[in-house]
Length: 396
Picture 1 (cartoon, one colour):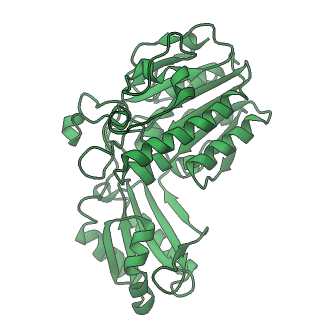
Picture 2: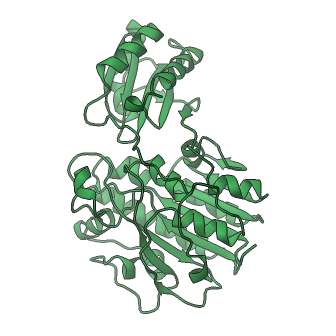
Picture 3: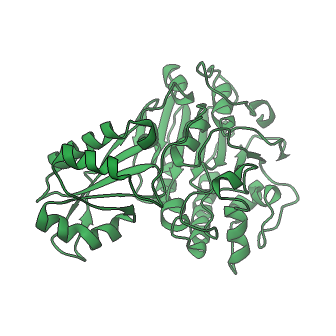
């Protein structure tokens, strides 16, 4: 057991901080999610993140570096191939992904995949494009209800999503179709990270609402992660937000679903009031889903300001034997071309009330620094075959 009894690892989903050296191969040369947001908005106030050292690490137009930041900070460079949520998180916890998950954002799914899915489900497929869940329902749900068709769509993540009206399509039928889709998309050329059942209710445009009966058919991580190691050693591994879906529940002892990123921070604040020993692992998805993919710079900046307010509350609850890590899983630069993720390095900011030092640390060559640091703190060996170098010794 190391110095810290509780570690809070918060993933600000998509908060990239500058293009990776190989970004041009992904069409992402020049991307800088955090930097470009700061450059393009008139006001940007993140005083709590600022005092931890984020502007000391990554220069920002409106946010000054502080003379003595509270935390340590550096950049983590992605070792894996790809730029999606699952790759970023899996690497964070030690897995090296050499073949990226497939995304179909720009092209839709291949005809061969849809033909097989249609044949095996007995349904005519409509949609087949990248869209938000509310948009696709307003556009196609009336047709699905009237004709018994099946809406299939995707997003900028590696997902295949199927909509089904709970009254006319039926939940069991929706789940059956998703199970078939999951089997089909296990092929390497079609392999997506998740197949998602998206049930909804309503009869006409303007009335459609998605229900809580969503079900994710996720790939399990390809190997054991830092989460598995912590759980096996008897530590609490508490997730907030999308973490359960990303890891298909593997290595977790408790899961908390979030309604929004603000709600996720509120849940984290409540967890900080509890006594536990281990990791609280948080994903805040709205930055990516609501603002990055929609290329809404002001919305993204506003979400960061809301996060900063809650961060201030969390900082006030941290104990001397707590460690806070703030990082990200990829970029989604809202000023960049297209609607896809962007291949970026990510910030790593660490703070504890008991830290005696602060400042810039050396750049690290893997997101897995996060998992390796957590594992070393708790005296837990990383599973065989994982990657990642720890910064634990520098954070005490």
